[in-house]
Length: 83
Image 1 (cartoon, one colour):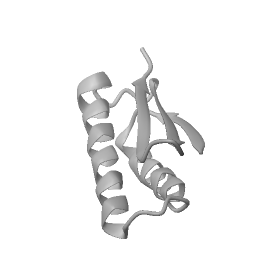
Image 2 (cartoon, rainbow, N blue to C red):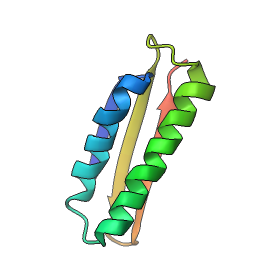
Image 3 (cartoon, rainbow, N blue to C red):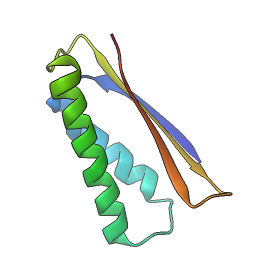
Image 4 (tube, rainbow, N blue to C red):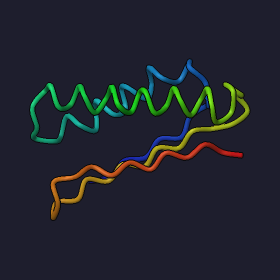
């Protein structure tokens, strides 16, 4: 299962990103507490990328690529901020 999102590098985008991650995780069979921990972790990573990566420069973008591999019980996330 894969999903991608590209959005502005701004705190305004965090709600959209949380919804994207939550929607992706709705198809994953894990406990709700684990889903919430993943959403919180991604939210913190995004906040750090926005603050420290581009100082909230909305002309930049954040790209999130999610990949759930059936062979391994892992979720891979690639987070990239444009230059």
